[in-house]
Image (cartoon, rainbow, N blue to C red; front, side, top):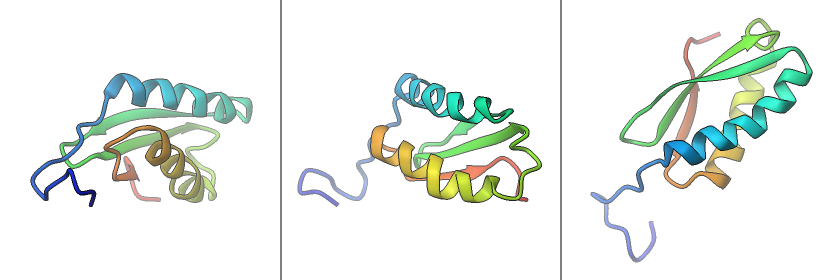
Length: 89
């Protein structure tokens, strides 16, 4: 926690920036026949995504989400605290 934040202060997720960042990620997924859809962003910064197309049934999609998508969103979208799938695989 930074000096300027208290426990009660949270950075709200900028939905426009989130969507723009997902658009960049989406290009790579679509190149492999997959896609990702934003389902929800809660007040705690938890982003819920649904893997679609070829990604929906891929055993590596949970790894892609946690090690790829989550890392990128946390780096580029302030306020994102976690990324989780819309349904557990």
